[in-house]
Image (tube, rainbow, N blue to C red; front, top):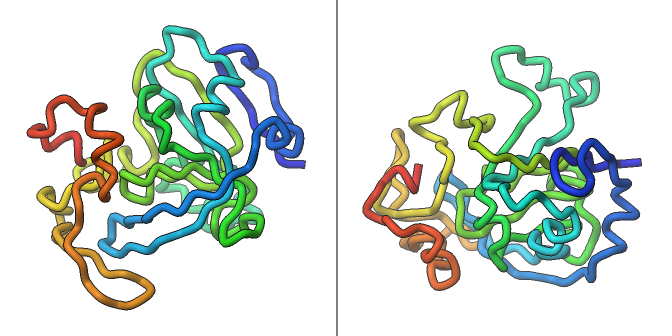
Length: 216
């Protein structure tokens, strides 16, 4: 009985049943490289549909500049959510241009099967050119916003996990280098590529790549 709540646009203040929603889109498989901010990576075959198709279906206002995603908040089931020092529920926010990019993806499955709980069942975001924490799991709400607000990690540690979170080997984390990454399958280390290797499709979204804040 998973539902997606919407704020803004055609479905403002309405909830859509997940099973009904997913039937509106053709499911496809995309194989993406996943790069964690903690300097490991892996290649993952996701099933789902482009985020742009979901945005188009929800019909946000033309004045929308940002899209916020929120995960579930059930501290009785997810006991770590009882930690009052964290700003639960978990949220992430991206620009509408990032949301409409062809690479942005809503995943409903992985390795040819439905998403298990630990991978973000029943629907999660995948943005392959950003660090993994931006790919929020178990989405229950989408908000269309005219102005930017802080997300979960940006509130906790803005100097380590900022808004943009674009992969850049030249911008280190405060506690480790991002120049190399460890492949989870082989254990080998490889040089990290800017935008996780997807620059051809996304660098036009960022006109000033010399601004390191784009990569925090």
